[in-house]
Length: 194
Image (tube, rainbow, N blue to C red; front, side):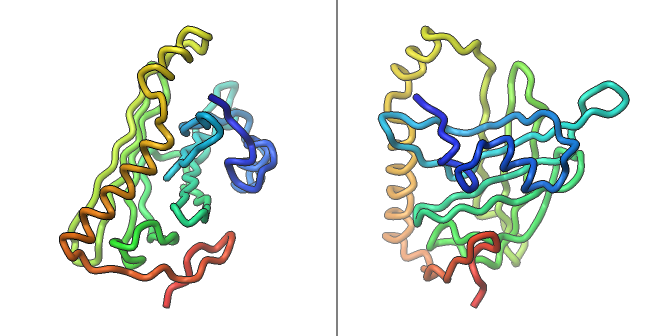
Protein backbone atom coordinates (compact mmCIF):
# COMPACT_ATOMS: atom_id res chain seq x y z
CA UNK A 1 0.00 0.00 0.00
CA UNK A 2 1.40 3.36 -0.99
CA UNK A 3 0.39 7.00 -1.13
CA UNK A 4 1.83 8.83 -4.12
CA UNK A 5 1.71 12.56 -4.70
CA UNK A 6 1.18 11.80 -8.41
CA UNK A 7 -2.24 10.33 -7.57
CA UNK A 8 -3.51 13.76 -6.51
CA UNK A 9 -3.69 17.27 -7.98
CA UNK A 10 -0.78 17.84 -10.36
CA UNK A 11 1.72 15.48 -8.75
CA UNK A 12 3.42 17.99 -6.45
CA UNK A 13 3.57 17.20 -2.73
CA UNK A 14 -0.07 16.94 -1.69
CA UNK A 15 0.08 19.46 1.16
CA UNK A 16 1.76 22.04 -1.07
CA UNK A 17 -0.82 21.47 -3.84
CA UNK A 18 -3.76 21.73 -1.40
CA UNK A 19 -2.49 24.97 0.13
CA UNK A 20 -1.90 26.52 -3.27
CA UNK A 21 -5.30 25.37 -4.50
CA UNK A 22 -7.10 26.92 -1.51
CA UNK A 23 -5.19 30.17 -1.93
CA UNK A 24 -4.74 30.30 1.85
CA UNK A 25 -1.07 30.26 2.93
CA UNK A 26 -2.13 30.31 6.59
CA UNK A 27 -3.21 26.67 6.32
CA UNK A 28 -0.90 24.80 8.63
CA UNK A 29 -2.30 21.29 8.77
CA UNK A 30 -4.20 19.06 6.39
CA UNK A 31 -5.93 15.75 6.98
CA UNK A 32 -6.73 13.54 4.02
CA UNK A 33 -9.32 10.80 3.49
CA UNK A 34 -8.35 8.78 0.43
CA UNK A 35 -7.68 5.31 -0.84
CA UNK A 36 -4.12 4.05 -1.08
CA UNK A 37 -2.49 2.44 -4.07
CA UNK A 38 -2.48 -1.39 -3.85
CA UNK A 39 -0.29 -3.51 -6.14
CA UNK A 40 0.42 -0.41 -8.22
CA UNK A 41 -3.24 0.52 -8.81
CA UNK A 42 -5.50 3.17 -7.32
CA UNK A 43 -8.86 4.72 -8.16
CA UNK A 44 -10.31 7.39 -5.91
CA UNK A 45 -13.76 8.57 -6.97
CA UNK A 46 -13.30 11.28 -4.34
CA UNK A 47 -10.63 12.27 -1.83
CA UNK A 48 -11.33 14.76 0.95
CA UNK A 49 -8.97 17.20 2.66
CA UNK A 50 -9.68 18.97 5.96
CA UNK A 51 -7.58 22.18 5.98
CA UNK A 52 -6.74 23.83 9.30
CA UNK A 53 -5.22 27.19 10.25
CA UNK A 54 -4.12 28.46 13.64
CA UNK A 55 -6.41 30.92 15.38
CA UNK A 56 -5.70 32.17 18.88
CA UNK A 57 -3.34 29.26 19.48
CA UNK A 58 -5.75 26.54 18.37
CA UNK A 59 -6.19 24.85 15.02
CA UNK A 60 -9.55 25.55 13.40
CA UNK A 61 -11.06 24.32 10.16
CA UNK A 62 -10.45 26.85 7.39
CA UNK A 63 -12.04 24.95 4.51
CA UNK A 64 -12.40 21.56 2.86
CA UNK A 65 -11.29 20.32 -0.54
CA UNK A 66 -13.03 17.55 -2.46
CA UNK A 67 -10.91 16.07 -5.24
CA UNK A 68 -13.21 14.25 -7.65
CA UNK A 69 -12.04 11.68 -10.22
CA UNK A 70 -13.86 9.73 -12.88
CA UNK A 71 -13.09 6.50 -14.72
CA UNK A 72 -12.03 8.55 -17.77
CA UNK A 73 -8.88 9.67 -15.91
CA UNK A 74 -10.15 13.20 -15.31
CA UNK A 75 -9.58 14.85 -11.95
CA UNK A 76 -11.11 18.03 -10.53
CA UNK A 77 -10.44 19.50 -7.10
CA UNK A 78 -13.22 21.64 -5.68
CA UNK A 79 -12.88 24.14 -2.86
CA UNK A 80 -15.56 23.88 -0.19
CA UNK A 81 -15.41 27.37 1.32
CA UNK A 82 -15.53 28.22 4.99
CA UNK A 83 -15.28 26.34 8.25
CA UNK A 84 -18.68 24.63 8.02
CA UNK A 85 -18.93 20.87 7.79
CA UNK A 86 -21.80 21.14 5.28
CA UNK A 87 -21.46 22.37 1.72
CA UNK A 88 -23.54 22.47 -1.46
CA UNK A 89 -22.58 23.30 -5.02
CA UNK A 90 -23.42 22.48 -8.63
CA UNK A 91 -21.80 19.48 -10.27
CA UNK A 92 -18.73 20.32 -12.39
CA UNK A 93 -17.34 16.90 -13.37
CA UNK A 94 -19.00 14.25 -15.52
CA UNK A 95 -18.69 11.21 -13.29
CA UNK A 96 -21.16 8.71 -14.72
CA UNK A 97 -22.94 8.35 -18.06
CA UNK A 98 -26.13 7.78 -16.06
CA UNK A 99 -25.98 11.13 -14.23
CA UNK A 100 -26.01 14.44 -16.10
CA UNK A 101 -24.27 17.67 -15.20
CA UNK A 102 -27.59 19.27 -14.26
CA UNK A 103 -27.23 18.08 -10.67
CA UNK A 104 -25.76 19.37 -7.44
CA UNK A 105 -23.83 17.90 -4.53
CA UNK A 106 -24.62 18.31 -0.85
CA UNK A 107 -21.67 17.34 1.36
CA UNK A 108 -21.63 16.72 5.11
CA UNK A 109 -18.59 15.77 7.20
CA UNK A 110 -17.54 14.97 10.72
CA UNK A 111 -14.38 16.33 12.27
CA UNK A 112 -11.74 13.60 12.08
CA UNK A 113 -11.18 11.94 15.45
CA UNK A 114 -11.43 8.33 16.51
CA UNK A 115 -13.94 8.04 13.68
CA UNK A 116 -14.56 10.06 10.54
CA UNK A 117 -17.35 10.16 8.00
CA UNK A 118 -18.19 11.98 4.81
CA UNK A 119 -21.57 11.95 3.07
CA UNK A 120 -22.55 13.09 -0.41
CA UNK A 121 -26.14 13.51 -1.58
CA UNK A 122 -26.58 13.97 -5.33
CA UNK A 123 -29.62 16.15 -6.05
CA UNK A 124 -31.29 16.57 -9.41
CA UNK A 125 -33.23 19.61 -10.63
CA UNK A 126 -36.58 17.93 -9.94
CA UNK A 127 -35.76 17.81 -6.22
CA UNK A 128 -34.95 14.12 -6.17
CA UNK A 129 -31.90 12.50 -4.57
CA UNK A 130 -30.88 9.74 -6.99
CA UNK A 131 -27.76 8.82 -5.06
CA UNK A 132 -26.22 9.03 -1.60
CA UNK A 133 -22.70 7.87 -0.80
CA UNK A 134 -21.16 7.60 2.67
CA UNK A 135 -17.56 6.97 3.67
CA UNK A 136 -16.93 5.95 7.26
CA UNK A 137 -13.65 5.04 8.93
CA UNK A 138 -12.13 4.38 12.32
CA UNK A 139 -8.69 5.56 13.39
CA UNK A 140 -6.05 2.85 13.58
CA UNK A 141 -2.41 3.23 14.47
CA UNK A 142 -0.27 2.87 11.35
CA UNK A 143 1.89 -0.19 11.96
CA UNK A 144 3.07 -3.12 9.87
CA UNK A 145 0.45 -5.26 11.62
CA UNK A 146 -2.48 -2.90 10.88
CA UNK A 147 -1.36 -2.58 7.25
CA UNK A 148 -1.16 -6.37 6.94
CA UNK A 149 -4.64 -6.78 8.45
CA UNK A 150 -6.04 -4.17 6.08
CA UNK A 151 -4.49 -5.89 3.08
CA UNK A 152 -5.89 -9.24 4.21
CA UNK A 153 -9.35 -7.79 4.78
CA UNK A 154 -9.42 -5.62 1.63
CA UNK A 155 -6.78 -7.19 -0.64
CA UNK A 156 -7.73 -5.44 -3.86
CA UNK A 157 -9.80 -2.50 -2.63
CA UNK A 158 -9.00 -0.08 -5.50
CA UNK A 159 -9.79 -2.76 -8.08
CA UNK A 160 -13.00 -3.60 -6.21
CA UNK A 161 -14.09 0.05 -6.35
CA UNK A 162 -13.51 0.17 -10.11
CA UNK A 163 -15.18 -3.21 -10.70
CA UNK A 164 -18.22 -2.28 -8.59
CA UNK A 165 -18.49 1.07 -10.39
CA UNK A 166 -18.63 -0.69 -13.75
CA UNK A 167 -20.99 -3.38 -12.40
CA UNK A 168 -23.44 -0.71 -11.23
CA UNK A 169 -23.15 1.03 -14.61
CA UNK A 170 -24.00 -2.24 -16.37
CA UNK A 171 -27.04 -2.72 -14.13
CA UNK A 172 -28.26 0.81 -14.90
CA UNK A 173 -27.68 0.31 -18.64
CA UNK A 174 -29.68 -2.95 -18.55
CA UNK A 175 -32.54 -1.06 -16.85
CA UNK A 176 -32.40 1.44 -19.75
CA UNK A 177 -31.60 4.40 -17.51
CA UNK A 178 -31.07 7.42 -19.82
CA UNK A 179 -27.47 7.75 -21.02
CA UNK A 180 -25.52 11.04 -20.92
CA UNK A 181 -22.57 11.30 -23.31
CA UNK A 182 -19.30 12.49 -21.84
CA UNK A 183 -18.77 16.19 -22.51
CA UNK A 184 -15.33 17.68 -23.19
CA UNK A 185 -13.15 18.23 -20.11
CA UNK A 186 -11.00 21.27 -19.37
CA UNK A 187 -8.40 20.84 -16.58
CA UNK A 188 -9.09 23.18 -13.70
CA UNK A 189 -12.64 23.93 -14.92
CA UNK A 190 -14.20 20.51 -15.24
CA UNK A 191 -16.68 19.12 -17.73
CA UNK A 192 -17.96 21.68 -20.20
CA UNK A 193 -21.71 22.02 -20.35
CA UNK A 194 -23.23 21.63 -23.80
